[in-house]
Length: 393
Image 1: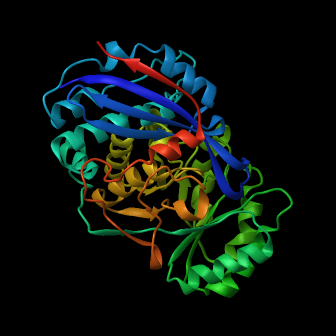
Image 2: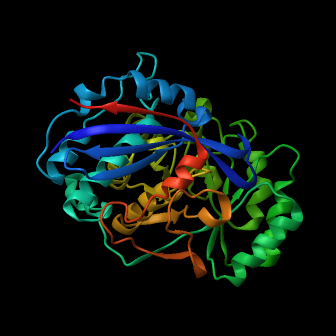
């Protein structure tokens, strides 16, 4: 078996409303969808979301990489079944510039390509994507197989009324965790958290995501204002350029520190572990380069005595929602789980299947072959800006 062709689609996904946090605000998102065809006719799909403020890449740069990188030399080998296909994909890297010591530029493209190939290979063998987890030796200590998973909620920088309404909805629908975006200029974070606590109660698990908005110099002061609201964790409180300063500040906070924008690759993760910068990694498939790299990062965190959560990126469609569901149902000890906001967030989910979580944030594991979902070709056509096909010899 071998690759026959890869087709990239630059799609523009409209959101159901403006999503705002300290790093960015958007009403639509440009994403990269990749369709893989194997020489036996098996089709697979993948998705990546380039974010310049996360991995340094734009949609234009990801598109240029797809058009110019020698994919035939890197991925053109033959493989006999899923195990050999995984062995072909695991060492695959895009060419990095000498200045990219983080080795994460191009991760959204790598994710989209890798997922499309894994989806096609799993469909060819009739197994779900979650089966990949138990075929990677490094994951032996973090494997699980569960029939359902549970997602947490999220609060962005909406108006007070919308935040109150969201809090009531989460409480009525049985959620137990939520992330609150803080650090947005002009927003009183203490007032927001006070308002949410009044609705959600004192036992509801609330964590905050600062999206790099604070500095090491201001972190103690900002944190002291929010400490009274029973925050369970702090995500990416300072910019990546200042992340080493967390080694000294982290013990003073008294709650776990999660790194997101500062953990996009194995190089990032090893620096964070060696420097003592955090307690958890936020793993997001697109920024980490795909399903296999995210598995390796979870295993690395576990080995180092750290935790991890599975995050998502604003604008993910049903393709990445499905991939995240497979990851969550096959990887143990995920502290917080984000994603599957499809019906509430995007106007085009690109899948026939609705993967939005249900009551309490619960959602079933996907058991069908590959991603276990059907891509809506008409929806892909509606949002496609351009497409390009790469054939393999």
